[in-house]
Length: 150
Image (cartoon, rainbow, N blue to C red; front, side):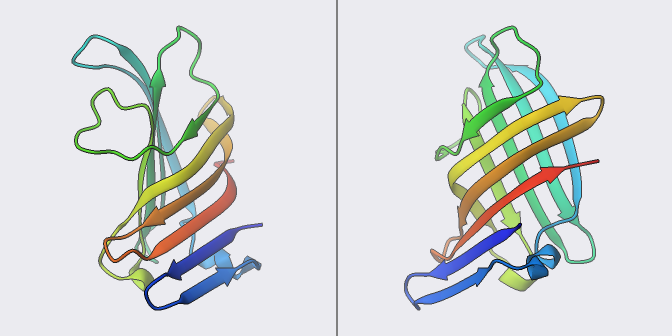
């Protein structure tokens, strides 16, 4: 069941949806990509990119997850959000953002949370995310949901 929490500590506004009405807020299309990248220092990193989008709602969540390449297949993993200060070169963890027409022009950036990839094969992906995102005004959104593209 999808879960979305929005709060603004300055104005004491809380918005919690625990019912299926949340379906219209989360982007419905899921695309993903896999790559192995090399940092400036020569270290190899596995990179997973998840893009949830919905053209009609003008919404998008993009998550970039990176971890050191251990020589194993890119088929599953668990990642934690880490704050990014600058460029993503050599970065490990999750960088992500969320935009939606109903939440203003300022994007929300991943502040804390996890993403787990349970299954990845033959262009199919399945996993779970529980990510809290924050915009420049301090407003937060928490998205906690399972996902798959089949």
